[in-house]
Image (cartoon, rainbow, N blue to C red):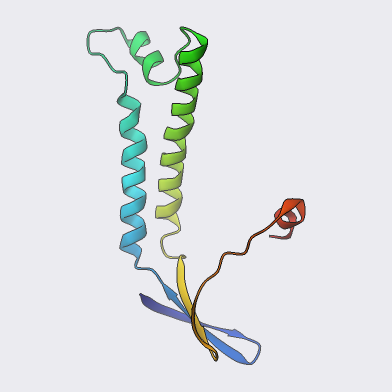
Length: 120
């Protein structure tokens, strides 16, 4: 863990410990590769461009294939977007923090309902 900066809260000083950047970057790149490589599911070199494109993105042959291809498209986009967000925010991930009471890991607060959405 890398100790990067001190944050003053009132009368106490907090020291943040961040994860190494390379971990987040590697995980982000793996997610981007997973999302990009799944676009080639359904590719057939002997089919036309339109048939390959519909098999690889959205398939309109029947309802079942459309729903499965829509789910796969959302999954692919989630992998790619999640990977880009991890790479972009690789320097901001806090692993632990110290103060006068000692070392503790950062806790993610649970937000319930609409009030939690508007307060962040």
